[in-house]
Length: 326
Image (cartoon, rainbow, N blue to C red):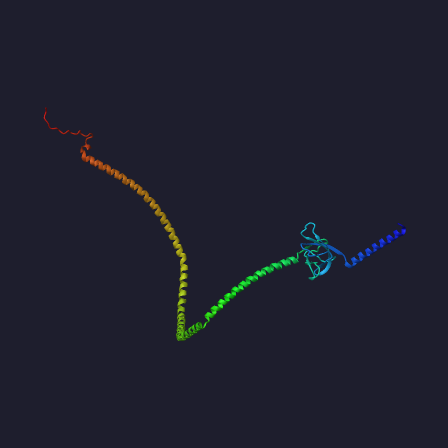
């Protein structure tokens, strides 16, 4: 390669680097500094890199990457870049949304609260799942099935109510027939006649009740002083009973004490009488024994009086036997 070619290549490379630097610097100046964050969703709903990121409805950045999470494949990792100075805080929540029905999906971030801590660059933004179109369709189908069953039940209930209403109208027609109307008219006429006949008696009873009420008022007026005197008498009796209660209670206490002492004395006398009974029983037994001995001695003296003089009893005499000598 000759010198001219080398110089030309160097110039072209320098120009490319210069143009790239100018483009990058101009892009940074136009777009401003960017801060990266990430969030996670279970359903991305067609979200692609380059989608808008809204903060409180204002575009503040773009989505840079949409991919399955390497640590949890059941969720989608979404990387976003937002303008530096965007007040994302710990209470901000990201969700999948759209500005209109026909526009592409976007990431919408709530504003959170002013007193919450600001999120540092690279932090994870809390997220909330959005109901997908498939879930919405399934819920609509389930709701339609439920509504169909409800309509069938309502139709059945309406038919039952219609039948009951027809029966009711038939019964009302029977009740309000010409014959029943005549009977009701006759009953009303009889009631009017009865009221007309009883009106004088009712007036008389009312007058008697009024007179009785006046007499009762007079009696109550006369009884009033008597009741007052009775109240005063009862009050005086209460005072007297209150005054006598103390002495009566003291007398009752003394009487109770005396009764206790008498009970103790009776117990002592009972014990002494029991001891005397035992002594008297022994004395009577001795007297009986002495009496028996005296009776035996008396009988012995009656039968053998000589026993009082002689120590030894005489021999018994033999009875002589009569007979001839051989």
